[in-house]
Amino acid sequence: MIELDVALAERSYPIHVGAGLLLQSPLWRTAIRGRHALVLSNTTVAPLYLEPVIAGLQGIDHATLIIEDGEQYKTFDNVVRVLDALARLGASRDATLIALGGGVIGDLGGFAAACWMRGIDFVQMPTTLLAMVDSSVGGKTGVNLAAGKNLVGAFHQPRAVFIDTSTLATLPEREFVAGLAEVVKYGAIGDKEFFNWLETHATDLLARDPDALDQAIASSCRHKAGVVARDERELGERALLNFGHTFGHALEVEAGYGEILHGEAVAIGMLLGARLSSQLGLAEVADSERLQILLKRFGLPTRIPDGHDAGRLLERMRLDKKSVSGAMRLILWRGIGQAEMVSGVSEDLIVELLANG
Image (cartoon, rainbow, N blue to C red; front, side):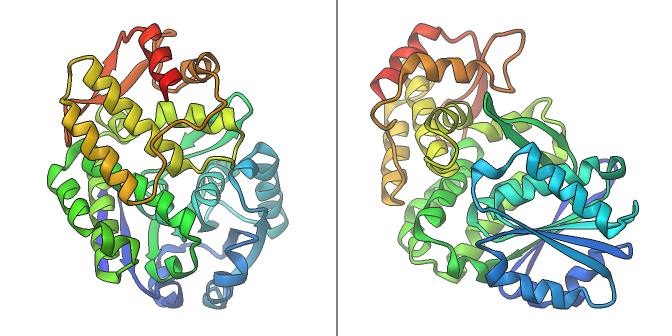
C-alpha cells in the first residue's frame, strides 16, 4: 500500500492507494469519528462493492443511499435526496458521509456533506480511474446546472481518501481510458519526466498492469496533493490543473451530460489548448504533436465531434469559473510540463480553433 498526505495549512489528510482496501475496514474505520455514517453510491457500483463497506460499519448507526449512475444525475435534486437521508438517519455534526463511486458520487456527496449542519466529515472511496487521480483529492465538490458544469459547489476537504485499485478490474474500458486523460494532464502541465514515463508505459497501462497503474495513480495523486497544499482555494497555481477543462466542460455541456465522458472532453480540450499555444507562439508544434500521439495511443478522442457550433461552444466557455469580469482566462502551455494561465486571447482565434476541431 502507498500512503500520501495532503498537507493543508489547517490540517492534513491521508491518501491510501492499494488493492483490496475496501476489505480493510480496520484501516478506513479510523477515518470515522462519530456514531452515524451514510454510504452514498450508485446503481452500478453498489452491487459490486457496497457489501464489504456495509460489513465494515458494524457497530455504527448507518444507512445507504443509491442514486442513478451518470453525470446527468449530479443535480440539486439528488443533493436533497442525500440531505433527506442524513435527516432520516438522525445524523449529528460528527456524522460521516462515505462516497463510494466515481466522480459524480464524490462531488455530489462532498457537496451534501458540506451543506449538512454546515459541514460534516466525508470519506472518498473512488472506484473509477478518473476519480482516483483527480476528483477524490482536493476538496472540490459541487453539482451541474443546465448552464454549465460544476457552477455550484464548495471547497470541502475529505477526511481521508481510500483508493482500492482492485475496483478498476470491473471498470468498463471506455471509462478506464477516459480516466487516462487526467493522468496525461499531470505530465502535460508540470512533470515532463512523468509524461515521458507515460509514453514508455502506455501499453502496460492499457493492459491494466498493477505495477504501472499503482505508479501512475500515486504519481498523479502526489502531484495534485502538492498543488492543493500550496493553493487550496484555487487562487493561483491550482488553476493550472484545469488544463483542457475550459474547452472540455463547454463540450460536455453542449453535447448533453453523459454523451461525452469527462476524460474524453478533457483530452480534446488539452489538445485544443496545446494547438492554441502553438498559434500564439508560446509552444512548439512538436509538443502538441507528441500530446496528440499519446492521447491516440490511449484511444482517446482528439477532435471535436461533428455537429457542434463553434459560437455556442464559445458561449459555454464564457461561463467558465476562471473567467474574471467577463474576460476568459485560459490554461495554455509553453510545451510539455510548462502550463500557465493566459488572458486576453482573441475570441475570433478561439472560434476559428473550435470550428476546425
